[in-house]
Amino acid sequence: MDGEATSAAARRVWAVGALCRAVADALEARFNPVAVRGEISGFSRASSGHCYFSLKDAQGQIRCAMFRRAAGLLEFAPRDGELVELTGRLGVYEPRGDLQLVVESMRRAGQGALFEQFLRLKAKLEAEGLFEAARKRALPLLPRGIGIVTSLGAAALHDVVTCLRRRAPHVPVVLAPAAVQGAQAAPDLAEALRSLYRLAESGTIDVILLVRGGGSIEDLWAFNDEQLARTIVTSPVPLVSGVGHETDFTIADFCADVRAPTPTAAAELAAQPRETWLAALGLMHERLREAAWRRIDRASQRLDQAAAHLGRPSARTAQQHLRIERQAQRLRSVLAARLKQGQEQLVQAQAALRAGLDRRLERTTRQCERIELRLQLLDPRLVLQRGYALLTDAASGHAITSVRQAHPGQAVRAALADGEVDLRVAPAAANRP
Image (cartoon, rainbow, N blue to C red; front, side, top):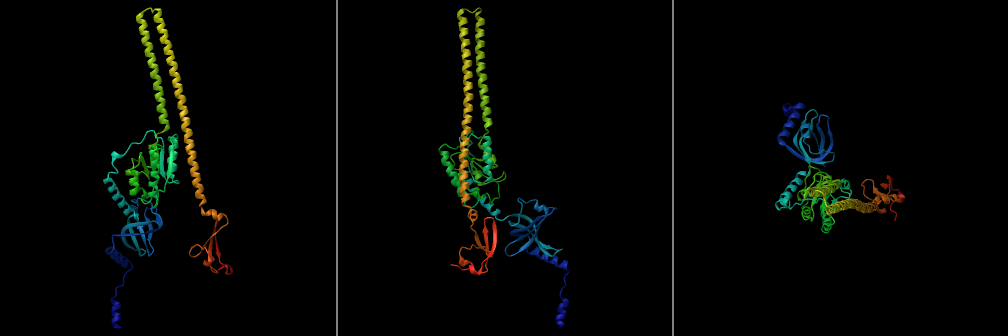
């Protein structure tokens, strides 16, 4: 008993604050600086600019604080549920005695590895000469047709079509739809490009636009595919890459003949405004008319000078003068008729171009409507609207497809066309044959 009393008296009694500081010092010496990966939970940004959240995984979580200086360097807006990699210093928040990670930097998980893959592929293809400026071609001034590769439901498609209809409604547009995100996107994009290459070889289209809206490096990863890059460089016509925003760069941008900062910019590069060409044609028309009148005026002036040298013109001279005047009048009439004919041809050409565009747009609209109808027919909600229901086990969420999966008193959930109903299996209803 005396030994135990001596041991208890010798045991150190910590003050709370001192113990917190000692633990913080131990963590500092053992772990810092530290890098950790997990899922964001409860993210909030205070009016001071500081950010507070928890980082968690299946086994645990830790509270985090990211002060304004570090938060101001973020290149994205963190969201709950996002997987990130953090670097910082582990410590103890002494007022509450909580373990806390003071975050110094944050990035999306996997972004670093993807960027390294991007750099390796870029270096490889650059060494093979796929990015050489000498192999890149200028865009045609007056394309006979424009091909577009993008997703059928993408906002980029709407932006590009709207721009082309405004700037060059007379130019036919051919759409080759493809997925622009996901594991199947790169093969889909390559196949869509090859389908347009066949049209280009037949003279239907003279330029191709490969476009997609902005996103993270993961969203745009399909455009960093090696096989897609090699497909791009085999294009028989100039190809414009308009992928992401102005700050986004992909391997497709380096392989394309022209890189546009946005999908809309790609459309603007491919099609000069119709008004520009009509204005140029009008200017040429005016110059031709003025040149013709100047030529007539010079001929008349030479005739007047010749008449002055002769003094009193003889009857022969008077006849020559009259004949020249008649020829000048006929020339004026012919010129006026030719100019009128040219104006009529221009009007007819504009009408033909407009009619051709309307027909092309109508065909494209019908194609889109057929595709939309097919997608609607595949919608499982149509089945539910006919009176059917989808039964699932309320606890596990697994679908119930046989009476053998139901037992008395079991809680089930029925999905109907306009909502869900929670049910319970009656004793007499279970295990019916």
